[in-house]
Amino acid sequence: MTNTPIPLPRSGAELEKLILSRGITPPSNQVAVAVYERVSRYDERSPGYSMEIQPDRAAEYARSQGWTIHKIYSDPNFSGKNSYRPGFKNLLRDIRAGKIQVIVIHKLDRLYRNLESLLRFVRLLQTHRVQLVSVTEQINTQNWWGRLVMYVLGALAEMWVWQTSERTREAIHTRISKHQLPAGSFRFGYCNGMCRNCTDPNGSGYCPRVGQPDREESERGRVQVPHPIEAHAVRLIVHLYSQGWSDRDIADHLNRNRFTLPDGAVVQFRTKGIAGRFAPGQFNRDSIRQIITNPFYVGVIARYPRPELSMEDSIDD
Image (cartoon, one colour):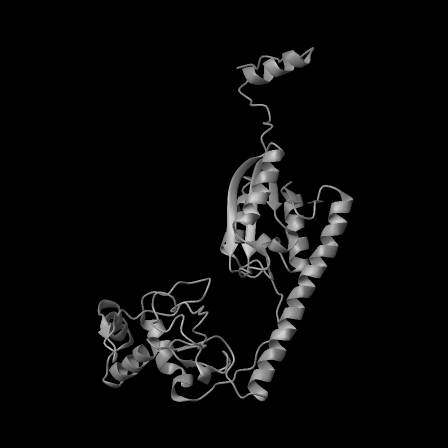
């Protein structure tokens, strides 16, 4: 079988007709855009970082350019010091799969607070011919000025992480050495005693003291005090364990039953969760084990050395 020679087109119209006749689709003018948003915690003083505003402004910019939004990738309550974020990992997969041509972000530090990782990410974008646009700072990595601004802002974003880490270490050291108080978040069974403006996950709609005067024994939130409901759950867990119950049996017992407190209130015990990240929920064998093995519940404060800040990261793993 011999191939029929293809005559050379003599005009643009003939070239377009030739392409279409051979089943080849011309490149589309529609650009596939990915919008990425991240916030480590919600701060009412900085509403521009909220998970609602970030994609809105990025999407508005994309529409003004005539681009098509492929997907919005979100990572609420995750740090930007590394790439270990579920939404960001999905973004990386789609970049490597060739599904994205432009990434639009609200601000550069929403993408990374790690300059080295940021530069690696930009090199990955260059390999796959993906453009990065920051709406707030007007950064476009397709020109030298945009790349220069990106380097400077990336370094400033990383400096914020180091400064925050140092301040946190100093605060923990002062709390332990000077005030002889435990460090870390409030454990299940305890709260900060700030009832008037309670922010505990097991506060509003669960604790009867919400809205009442602050508890004096908490010293304005410095000292952990027994939670009015959770404290009873801790005592019950310890009692059942002393009777030979397994971790799983205790968890099932707490999840399946309602309990009457000394004041006559009937409640369904639940875990504390993490404010702004995980809502209170059911117990499992691990949550029971953490209570039983934690020396804090017998009056002993375990003080573990705080590791140095690590910025190690790999966008390939």
